[in-house]
Image 1 (tube, rainbow, N blue to C red):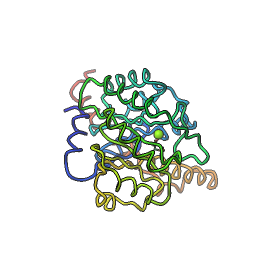
Image 2 (image 1 turned 180 degrees about the horizontal axis):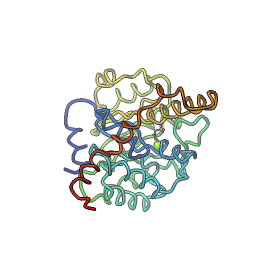
Image 3 (image 1 turned 90 degrees about the horizontal axis):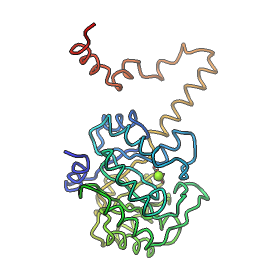
Image 4 (image 1 turned 90 degrees about the vertical axis):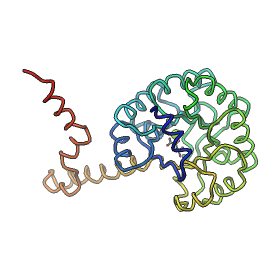
Length: 291
Ligand code: SPV
Ligand code: MG
Protein backbone atom coordinates (compact mmCIF):
# COMPACT_ATOMS: atom_id res chain seq x y z
CA UNK A 1 0.00 0.00 0.00
CA UNK A 2 1.35 3.48 -0.80
CA UNK A 3 2.23 5.79 2.09
CA UNK A 4 -0.31 8.26 0.78
CA UNK A 5 -3.01 5.59 1.09
CA UNK A 6 -1.77 4.73 4.60
CA UNK A 7 -2.06 8.39 5.57
CA UNK A 8 -5.58 8.57 4.09
CA UNK A 9 -6.50 5.52 6.17
CA UNK A 10 -5.09 7.11 9.32
CA UNK A 11 -7.29 10.14 8.58
CA UNK A 12 -10.40 7.97 8.52
CA UNK A 13 -9.65 6.23 11.83
CA UNK A 14 -10.59 7.72 15.16
CA UNK A 15 -7.83 9.54 17.06
CA UNK A 16 -5.07 11.98 16.23
CA UNK A 17 -2.34 11.28 13.69
CA UNK A 18 0.90 12.21 15.45
CA UNK A 19 3.91 13.22 13.37
CA UNK A 20 7.40 14.05 14.61
CA UNK A 21 10.01 16.14 12.81
CA UNK A 22 13.18 14.72 11.30
CA UNK A 23 15.91 15.75 8.87
CA UNK A 24 17.39 12.44 7.74
CA UNK A 25 16.90 8.68 7.65
CA UNK A 26 18.16 8.11 11.17
CA UNK A 27 15.80 10.68 12.69
CA UNK A 28 12.88 9.24 10.71
CA UNK A 29 13.71 5.73 11.89
CA UNK A 30 13.77 6.87 15.51
CA UNK A 31 10.32 8.42 15.04
CA UNK A 32 8.95 5.19 13.54
CA UNK A 33 10.50 3.00 16.24
CA UNK A 34 9.05 5.22 18.95
CA UNK A 35 5.57 4.36 17.63
CA UNK A 36 4.42 7.58 15.98
CA UNK A 37 2.11 7.39 12.98
CA UNK A 38 4.25 9.52 10.67
CA UNK A 39 7.34 11.62 10.05
CA UNK A 40 7.42 15.37 9.36
CA UNK A 41 10.24 16.33 7.02
CA UNK A 42 10.78 19.70 8.66
CA UNK A 43 12.31 22.63 6.77
CA UNK A 44 13.62 23.95 10.09
CA UNK A 45 15.33 20.64 10.83
CA UNK A 46 16.73 20.09 7.34
CA UNK A 47 18.14 23.61 7.12
CA UNK A 48 19.47 23.47 10.70
CA UNK A 49 21.15 20.16 9.87
CA UNK A 50 23.10 22.11 7.22
CA UNK A 51 23.89 24.77 9.82
CA UNK A 52 22.01 27.48 7.93
CA UNK A 53 18.78 29.51 8.44
CA UNK A 54 15.33 28.18 7.53
CA UNK A 55 14.82 30.93 4.95
CA UNK A 56 14.36 29.25 1.54
CA UNK A 57 18.16 29.01 1.18
CA UNK A 58 18.41 25.30 0.40
CA UNK A 59 17.17 24.20 -2.99
CA UNK A 60 14.10 22.06 -3.62
CA UNK A 61 16.36 19.17 -4.59
CA UNK A 62 18.16 19.33 -1.24
CA UNK A 63 14.83 19.07 0.60
CA UNK A 64 13.87 16.25 -1.78
CA UNK A 65 17.09 14.39 -0.98
CA UNK A 66 16.38 14.69 2.75
CA UNK A 67 12.81 13.42 2.35
CA UNK A 68 14.01 10.54 0.21
CA UNK A 69 16.46 9.45 2.90
CA UNK A 70 13.51 9.29 5.32
CA UNK A 71 11.25 7.35 2.95
CA UNK A 72 13.95 4.82 2.07
CA UNK A 73 14.40 3.50 5.62
CA UNK A 74 10.87 3.73 7.07
CA UNK A 75 7.44 2.39 6.24
CA UNK A 76 5.22 5.01 7.92
CA UNK A 77 3.92 8.05 6.00
CA UNK A 78 6.34 10.95 5.54
CA UNK A 79 4.72 14.36 5.18
CA UNK A 80 6.98 17.00 3.68
CA UNK A 81 7.15 20.61 4.72
CA UNK A 82 7.14 22.13 1.23
CA UNK A 83 7.55 25.72 2.46
CA UNK A 84 6.08 28.14 -0.11
CA UNK A 85 6.61 25.64 -2.94
CA UNK A 86 10.05 27.13 -3.75
CA UNK A 87 8.66 29.79 -6.08
CA UNK A 88 5.41 30.25 -7.97
CA UNK A 89 2.70 27.78 -9.11
CA UNK A 90 5.11 26.33 -11.71
CA UNK A 91 7.52 25.45 -8.92
CA UNK A 92 4.67 23.94 -6.88
CA UNK A 93 3.63 21.74 -9.81
CA UNK A 94 7.18 20.46 -10.33
CA UNK A 95 7.66 20.01 -6.57
CA UNK A 96 4.56 17.82 -6.19
CA UNK A 97 5.62 15.64 -9.12
CA UNK A 98 9.07 15.07 -7.63
CA UNK A 99 7.99 14.45 -4.03
CA UNK A 100 5.13 12.13 -4.97
CA UNK A 101 7.57 10.18 -7.15
CA UNK A 102 9.90 9.91 -4.14
CA UNK A 103 7.18 8.12 -2.18
CA UNK A 104 6.18 10.74 0.36
CA UNK A 105 2.56 10.64 1.57
CA UNK A 106 1.78 14.32 1.34
CA UNK A 107 3.10 17.85 1.40
CA UNK A 108 2.27 21.17 3.01
CA UNK A 109 2.53 24.53 1.26
CA UNK A 110 2.35 27.77 3.23
CA UNK A 111 0.80 31.03 2.06
CA UNK A 112 3.82 33.26 2.64
CA UNK A 113 5.86 35.10 0.04
CA UNK A 114 8.92 33.36 -1.35
CA UNK A 115 11.60 33.49 0.02
CA UNK A 116 10.14 32.83 3.44
CA UNK A 117 11.50 33.06 6.99
CA UNK A 118 10.83 30.50 9.72
CA UNK A 119 7.43 31.17 11.29
CA UNK A 120 8.75 31.22 14.85
CA UNK A 121 11.70 33.55 14.22
CA UNK A 122 11.38 36.70 16.34
CA UNK A 123 11.16 39.66 13.95
CA UNK A 124 11.05 37.30 10.96
CA UNK A 125 9.69 38.38 7.57
CA UNK A 126 6.15 37.00 7.55
CA UNK A 127 4.64 38.74 4.51
CA UNK A 128 1.71 36.79 3.11
CA UNK A 129 1.14 35.89 -0.53
CA UNK A 130 -2.10 37.04 -2.16
CA UNK A 131 -5.05 34.74 -1.44
CA UNK A 132 -5.70 34.04 -5.14
CA UNK A 133 -2.02 33.58 -5.88
CA UNK A 134 -1.88 30.88 -3.19
CA UNK A 135 -5.20 29.29 -4.20
CA UNK A 136 -3.57 28.92 -7.65
CA UNK A 137 -0.69 27.06 -6.01
CA UNK A 138 -3.08 24.63 -4.31
CA UNK A 139 -4.86 24.05 -7.62
CA UNK A 140 -1.47 23.44 -9.27
CA UNK A 141 -0.58 20.94 -6.54
CA UNK A 142 -3.84 19.08 -7.10
CA UNK A 143 -3.37 19.04 -10.86
CA UNK A 144 0.20 17.73 -10.48
CA UNK A 145 -0.47 14.74 -8.24
CA UNK A 146 -0.82 11.38 -10.00
CA UNK A 147 -2.72 9.63 -7.23
CA UNK A 148 -5.76 11.21 -5.59
CA UNK A 149 -4.43 9.69 -2.31
CA UNK A 150 -1.46 12.08 -2.25
CA UNK A 151 -2.32 14.52 0.55
CA UNK A 152 -2.11 18.26 -0.08
CA UNK A 153 -2.16 20.40 3.04
CA UNK A 154 -2.57 24.18 2.83
CA UNK A 155 -0.83 26.03 5.62
CA UNK A 156 -2.38 29.29 6.75
CA UNK A 157 0.11 31.82 8.11
CA UNK A 158 -2.33 34.68 8.79
CA UNK A 159 -2.05 34.29 12.59
CA UNK A 160 1.76 34.12 12.33
CA UNK A 161 1.72 37.35 10.28
CA UNK A 162 -0.64 39.04 12.78
CA UNK A 163 -3.48 39.46 10.26
CA UNK A 164 -6.13 38.13 12.64
CA UNK A 165 -8.81 35.46 12.87
CA UNK A 166 -11.09 36.73 10.08
CA UNK A 167 -8.26 36.69 7.57
CA UNK A 168 -7.19 33.22 8.75
CA UNK A 169 -10.71 31.77 8.42
CA UNK A 170 -11.22 33.40 5.01
CA UNK A 171 -7.94 32.06 3.66
CA UNK A 172 -8.53 28.56 5.05
CA UNK A 173 -11.97 28.40 3.42
CA UNK A 174 -10.60 29.62 0.09
CA UNK A 175 -7.83 26.99 0.14
CA UNK A 176 -10.32 24.19 0.87
CA UNK A 177 -12.36 25.42 -2.09
CA UNK A 178 -9.16 25.27 -4.17
CA UNK A 179 -8.79 21.61 -3.23
CA UNK A 180 -6.69 21.38 -0.05
CA UNK A 181 -7.22 18.07 1.78
CA UNK A 182 -6.43 19.62 5.18
CA UNK A 183 -5.59 23.00 6.68
CA UNK A 184 -2.51 23.53 8.82
CA UNK A 185 -3.29 26.54 10.97
CA UNK A 186 -0.07 27.83 12.47
CA UNK A 187 0.38 30.05 15.53
CA UNK A 188 3.41 31.33 17.39
CA UNK A 189 1.45 32.42 20.44
CA UNK A 190 2.58 30.88 23.75
CA UNK A 191 -1.09 30.93 24.76
CA UNK A 192 -3.25 28.30 23.01
CA UNK A 193 -6.23 30.72 23.06
CA UNK A 194 -5.49 31.91 19.51
CA UNK A 195 -5.57 28.37 18.10
CA UNK A 196 -8.56 27.33 20.21
CA UNK A 197 -10.50 30.30 18.81
CA UNK A 198 -9.63 29.32 15.24
CA UNK A 199 -10.57 25.67 15.79
CA UNK A 200 -13.81 26.55 17.55
CA UNK A 201 -14.90 28.88 14.72
CA UNK A 202 -13.83 26.50 11.93
CA UNK A 203 -16.82 25.25 9.94
CA UNK A 204 -14.92 24.10 6.85
CA UNK A 205 -15.06 20.59 5.43
CA UNK A 206 -11.34 19.87 5.78
CA UNK A 207 -9.69 18.59 8.95
CA UNK A 208 -7.14 20.76 10.77
CA UNK A 209 -3.46 20.22 11.50
CA UNK A 210 -1.71 21.84 14.51
CA UNK A 211 1.96 22.45 15.34
CA UNK A 212 1.94 23.16 19.09
CA UNK A 213 5.64 24.12 19.44
CA UNK A 214 4.94 27.45 21.18
CA UNK A 215 1.77 26.34 23.01
CA UNK A 216 2.76 22.95 24.50
CA UNK A 217 0.07 23.19 27.19
CA UNK A 218 -2.40 22.11 24.49
CA UNK A 219 -1.91 18.37 24.96
CA UNK A 220 -3.27 15.63 22.71
CA UNK A 221 -6.13 15.09 25.15
CA UNK A 222 -7.18 18.76 24.95
CA UNK A 223 -6.76 18.81 21.16
CA UNK A 224 -8.94 15.72 20.84
CA UNK A 225 -11.61 17.40 22.97
CA UNK A 226 -11.67 20.37 20.58
CA UNK A 227 -12.57 18.05 17.69
CA UNK A 228 -11.93 19.04 14.03
CA UNK A 229 -8.16 18.51 14.43
CA UNK A 230 -6.87 15.33 12.82
CA UNK A 231 -3.10 15.76 12.88
CA UNK A 232 -0.59 17.12 15.33
CA UNK A 233 3.04 17.79 14.41
CA UNK A 234 5.83 17.82 17.00
CA UNK A 235 8.04 19.66 14.54
CA UNK A 236 11.55 19.85 15.95
CA UNK A 237 11.82 17.98 19.22
CA UNK A 238 14.32 15.38 18.01
CA UNK A 239 16.63 18.07 16.66
CA UNK A 240 16.51 20.14 19.84
CA UNK A 241 17.13 17.11 22.03
CA UNK A 242 20.10 16.08 19.88
CA UNK A 243 21.67 19.56 20.00
CA UNK A 244 21.46 19.62 23.79
CA UNK A 245 22.90 16.10 24.17
CA UNK A 246 25.77 16.78 21.74
CA UNK A 247 26.67 20.10 23.34
CA UNK A 248 26.73 18.46 26.74
CA UNK A 249 29.03 15.63 25.63
CA UNK A 250 31.36 17.91 23.67
CA UNK A 251 31.78 20.24 26.65
CA UNK A 252 32.45 17.28 28.93
CA UNK A 253 35.18 15.85 26.67
CA UNK A 254 36.88 19.26 26.62
CA UNK A 255 36.57 19.61 30.36
CA UNK A 256 37.61 16.04 31.28
CA UNK A 257 40.53 15.86 28.84
CA UNK A 258 39.31 12.54 27.45
CA UNK A 259 36.36 10.25 26.89
CA UNK A 260 36.87 8.08 30.02
CA UNK A 261 33.70 9.21 31.85
CA UNK A 262 31.09 9.40 29.11
CA UNK A 263 29.44 6.01 28.88
CA UNK A 264 26.42 7.04 30.93
CA UNK A 265 25.72 9.75 28.34
CA UNK A 266 26.08 7.58 25.24
CA UNK A 267 24.16 4.78 23.56
CA UNK A 268 26.33 1.68 23.08
CA UNK A 269 27.75 1.03 19.59
CA UNK A 270 25.40 -1.96 19.32
CA UNK A 271 22.47 0.45 19.38
CA UNK A 272 23.94 2.39 16.46
CA UNK A 273 24.51 -0.82 14.47
CA UNK A 274 20.92 -1.85 15.16
CA UNK A 275 19.59 1.47 13.89
CA UNK A 276 21.68 0.97 10.76
CA UNK A 277 20.00 -2.43 10.26
CA UNK A 278 23.36 -4.15 10.35
CA UNK A 279 21.76 -7.46 11.50
CA UNK A 280 19.70 -7.53 8.27
CA UNK A 281 22.83 -6.93 6.22
CA UNK A 282 24.57 -9.80 8.05
CA UNK A 283 21.67 -12.12 7.19
CA UNK A 284 22.06 -11.15 3.53
CA UNK A 285 25.78 -11.84 3.74
CA UNK A 286 25.00 -15.36 4.94
CA UNK A 287 22.85 -15.93 1.91
CA UNK A 288 24.73 -14.17 -0.83
CA UNK A 289 28.42 -13.64 0.00
CA UNK A 290 30.52 -16.44 -1.41
CA UNK A 291 34.22 -15.85 -1.29
C1 SPV B 1 9.11 23.29 10.38
O1 SPV B 1 9.24 22.37 11.20
O2 SPV B 1 9.97 23.55 9.53
C2 SPV B 1 7.90 24.11 10.38
C3 SPV B 1 7.20 24.38 11.64
O3 SPV B 1 7.57 24.64 9.33
S1 SPV B 1 7.80 25.92 12.23
O4 SPV B 1 9.23 25.78 12.49
O5 SPV B 1 7.05 26.21 13.45
O6 SPV B 1 7.56 26.94 11.22
MG1 MG C 1 9.12 24.75 7.96
